[in-house]
Image (cartoon, rainbow, N blue to C red):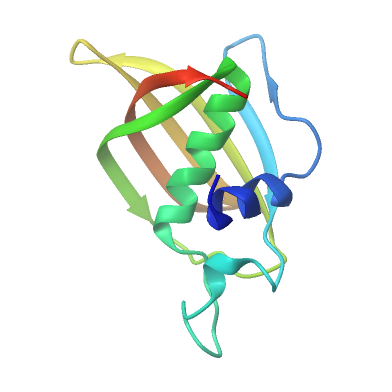
Length: 128
């Protein structure tokens, strides 16, 4: 596991859950020392889009019990920057769209939607 994935795991706030409707929910808080903020951007750090995508991937892997591999990003909207020490709430669910199994994710800080994603994943093996 590389530094970014380790940092995502360390930023997890409590146990993730899946509700009766199949919505997976995880909470994360990336501190000032999170490696993803390095150089992005000096004096005004924001969470890189790829880290937001990898955080969704991490949540889905945890909740399905199977490591996932990113196949495609079908849609992504990054609406508001995530700064250090903000609680990021990730909600996602599996959907079938145009015959493909995709994951629809919404990331929020407080009442503000920071990103929406529609991603395609592929199982990559059991979690260690």
